[in-house]
Amino acid sequence: MATINIENSNIEIEETVDIAFNYAKRAQWLRAALLGANDGLLSTATIMMGVGAVSKDIATMIISGIATLVGGACSMAIGEFVSVYSQYDIEMSQFKRDIKNGQIGSDEQKDKKNELPSPTKAALASACAFAFGALMPLLAAAFIHNYHVRLGVVVGVVSVALIGFGCLSAFLGGAPMVKPTLRILIGGWLAMTITFGLTKAVGSAGLVVT
Image (cartoon, rainbow, N blue to C red; front, side, top):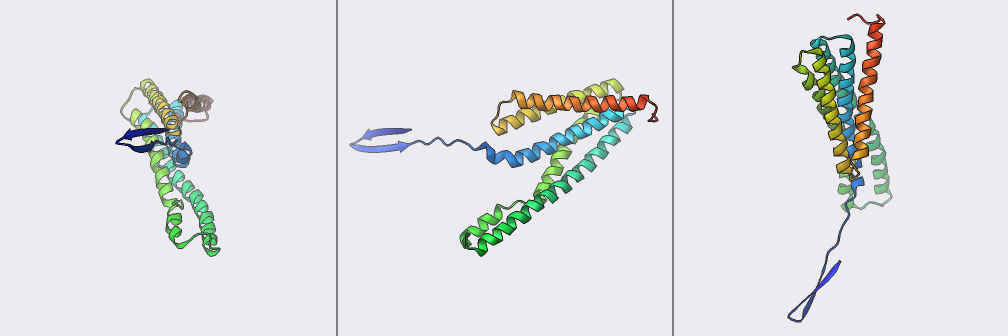
């Protein structure tokens, strides 16, 4: 939009440019962060619910959640490190070829090198995101000794967290909030229900000693 201000016979043209934000730039880190947190939340919650289906002991439920947190965070970190390192090797090889062929000048080399992905940062981010998500059901169940209340609180806290993740994902991605939030919420409910139901069935069949 252009406006013309006339004062003392001088014409000044001011230009206002509306620049649309490119939400696609957020896609990579947003995906990694939300995937890690959501995976930590659901992995820990479903395992705790599965253990809770065959054992009412709070200690057993909490220990299973802690084991999931530690094991899952390590698994996410290693997987992300290997994956990003593969991407780093590919981009570094291309970077070296571009330098050799003269496609990148000396002034651009530092900037281009800084744009290469960091496997270590990606691994730490994934592990921290997983641990953050896993802490929610753990803290929800840690101080509740009544069996049925404990299960209900875990489901409630996980549901609220899933809604939060869905809304955050939609907001940061510039997308409508309702559909992404419903997808992630219903998916979480299905994961907990299926795990609880199947584990309960296995326990009822006498295959698990409670």
